[in-house]
View 1: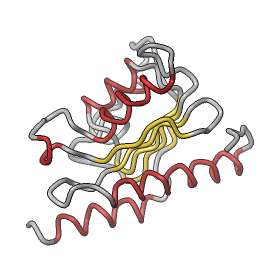
View 2 (view 1 turned 90 degrees about the vertical axis):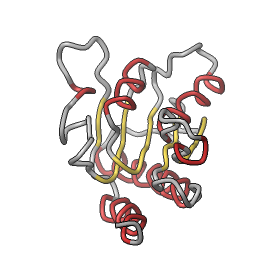
View 3 (view 1 turned 30 degrees about the vertical axis):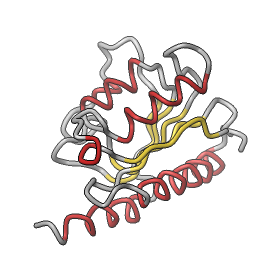
View 4 (view 1 turned 180 degrees about the vertical axis):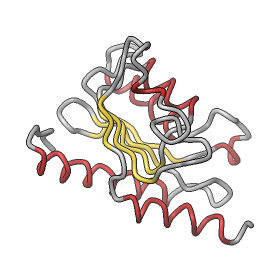
Length: 160
């Protein structure tokens, strides 16, 4: 997939990336909140994907974004930097994940559903676009939002 610059093409590319993240979320362990994250290289090729594994691994840092970023740094070949890369994630990143995205120097973040309780890319905080930080990626929010939100909503219906 080629990354484009015109608005319509950017939206279409973002939707394709988000569908990959949704597919990944649907493969999450049944005990974990179904959130999927996929990192794409500067040319649009998939570098890594992961679903939440917090419950499965017993690890509070095993969020989909962190797991995908870890794998993508190995695949990308520029140490810990993911410059030029795009992260697509089905739910707005939390503060930990937003911090990791910034530290990894991801160039663009695409997310689906807003997370008003813990979101750190515009809902509760806006870590990624804080003008005091050195690195501020482009953010495209609400991509396939209804589908992303429904997946999480369905997960919690049986648990609350």
